[in-house]
Image (cartoon, rainbow, N blue to C red; front, side, top):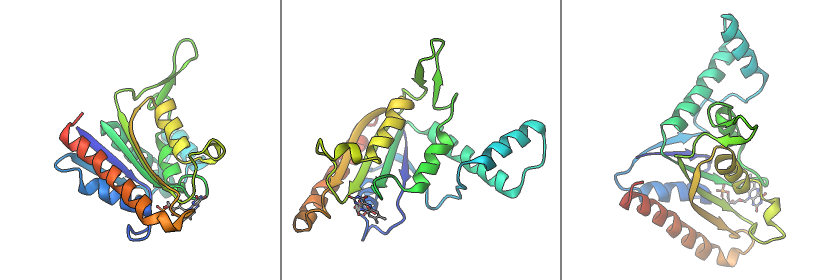
Length: 210
Ligand SMILES: Cc1cc2nc3c(=O)[nH]c(=O)nc-3n(C[C@H](O)[C@H](O)[C@H](O)COP(=O)(O)O)c2cc1C
């Protein structure tokens, strides 16, 4: 079993709750084979015309610019990491109602027809990663689990829509710590409970590898 953890926060664990969730998860994995793809540490040029220019140049056999070489290599690295994983853990915060831009870039790199999804002969969208499992570890300072606030939340909802809804992965676990900024008097308890759940999730993997 190969576990890939996509780490999407470069704030220190002493300050950032989702970084602490990542750390706690890693500490409790035991001997499970795990690798981390740290989106803030990777060289990941933004997705856009540079990539499409690079594709066209490769097709034509033209010389790539340095930026085009970097973006092609970065995209390939992200795709290879995802392809090699049986279980993909996404550890990320809610920032400004969404995911950090570097995590968005990771998703942009792997969101590709023929790799993560395709349209079948009836035009129906099909995920191409049904054998992979996903785990979500996320923190958010406000409360986004009520019927009124849930539609505002575009980090966990987004990742679930992409990896579950489009790529077809099975989401086997989801640990969300929320409300610690909204209720500072309860913050320690909220965070401690969530970290204990992140530890349990890791221990379950290590006890019963899938
Ligand atoms: C740059 C930034 C933006 C944030 N935006 C939001 C937000 O839109 N809504 C919210 O409830 N909390 C927001 N927060 C609080 C975080 O959700 C909270 O700190 C949570 O623990 C996840 O971020 P962290 O892992 O970096 O701590 C923000 C925090 C930071 C640092």
